[in-house]
Every structure is written in structure tokens, then in C-alpha cells.
Length: 351
Ligand code: FES
Image (tube, protein in one colour):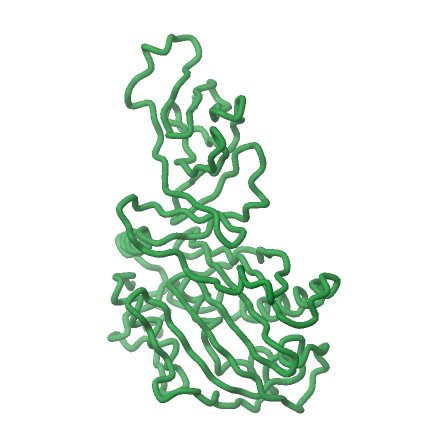
């Protein structure tokens, strides 16, 4: 039995450490468009939360009632000001304080009758939550979102992946699997091409953990390289990639014959082995919204091809570099090595 298989399941402490290391970061938890006038339940790092508009503000709070632990996502918003639990009617205001308990007057509400409220903000059409009140981590950048030169499609959510979040980031960062996993789409079957790194220092990581990987490669005609439909071609055209990864986002900027296309991925770590992928496509050509569907289907097809591979990877969480349970080779795997080094620097623990 290989070490990977033996170590497939992380221990409880390893999972707890993983959650703790990711706690200071801003994580996407929902699309803004999915937040209506009633509570919306999400799970972040195995913690149930409720996102809800109270007192005119979008707030994120613990999703479990302080009374008998019922899910607050089952409750309802009262007069836009309080969230009422469905079980016995306790009501919480936008600070998380319980302000009404049926059958007793206000003076007799226990001071401990409150739920935790977390920092919450809307950016790029997504709701982001930070569980650490003292964290100074910045939100990931997505400059094309505010750039009117780019047409932005809808934000999609693929089915949740049975994999840890770093595995998804690394799948989008990996630039040598195209001919094996995406033949005729992003690469030519069984004819891998080593990406041509565009700088002497091809992969950089700044102090905020923003990793940049640039390269030029050959791709078959597809909506992102030429603006054309995929035709399972063996003829390829040049395409330039500018990839930007953070701990929980991955932006692929591809310059092809028609212009620039962008895939912005934001990953929500639901559990150590379950991840939600919010994704938006943007492009500065073919801006007709009627074309969005074709781009979406193309991207969805790529993701489904990746998903099968990523969900098969073991251990669930990345093993330490020094354990050499992953046998990286250079220069092919340099972006992955640098991303994992960054994870280790910020203390994302290993199995
Ligand atoms: Fe919420 Fe009783 S469990 S009010």
C-alpha cells in the first residue's frame, strides 16, 4: 500500500488545524443574487452560518439558535429587523443579540442569549465572510470585474467537489495536464507541450500570497483561444496565460487570437473534503450576452473533466512537501510547488 493510500484520511487534529489556518482569510460563501429577503444557510469550514439582511445590512452569523440549536436558516425575517427562529420564536437582531423571547419580558432575556456575528462584505457579485475579527488579510483581487472593457457572464456554481480546496486551486494552476485531461479542447491528445515560461522567474509569490504564473502554450481552436467552437483539432494556435492564484481564488487570463478571456474562480471550503466553486467568465471580445451560454458550456465541460481527476486524488489534504508523498518534477510542476510552499508558510497544515 502506498503512503498516499495509508494517509488518505486525515486525523481530527489535522482537520481542526486546517480550519484554523484558513480562518483568517476572506472566503466566498454565496452569490449575492441568491440572498433574498429570507435567511440563507451556508457552511464554511464546517461551521453552519446564516446570511441575512437585517436592519438594511447584510450580516453573517452563526446558523444555530442559542436556545435548542435549531437551524436559523429555517427561520424568518421579521419586519426586516430581526431573524426569528422557527422552533420557539426567539428573535435575533443584526448584532446577533437575542431581543425577543416569547412568553417573557425583555428584562428577562439572558445576556448569553446571542449568536456570533462575523465580518461580511459583498464583492464581485459574491458574499465574502471572514471568521477572524482580528485578521488583516485582504480580499483577493479581480480587476477585470470593474473593467468595462470586459463583458461578464453569470456567476456559476458547479456541483460541490468532493475534494479539499487546495486541490481545486492546483488543478486550475496546473499547466501540463491539458493533453491528457482535455484532449482536443485545451491540448492535443497524447502530445503534451511544455509551457514556455515568459520570464526568468516564471512563478512569483508576493507577501500577501498572490502567486503569478505566466506562460505561452499551444491550444486547439476553442472559445478562449480563437473565439471558435471546439472542433477536436490537432492543429494548434498560440495562447498566452496569465494565472493569478491566492489561497482560495484562481484567475486564468488567456490572450488568444480574438482577445482576452478571463476565468475567475473563487473557492469556498465547506469542509476539508468538500469545496464549492463560484466561477465567472469575462471576455473583451464576442460581447454579445447571447454567446454566454456557449462559453459557459465550454467551461463547464472542462471543469467536469478536471473534477473526476481532482476527486480521485489522495490524501484528501496535501501531504507535507518534505514527506515527498507527492513526487513533483521540475520545471513542469513549479507553479504547484510554489503554491504549496505558500500554503506551508501560512500554516495550512498537512496531514
Ligand atoms: Fe430556536 Fe428554540 S431552538 S427558539
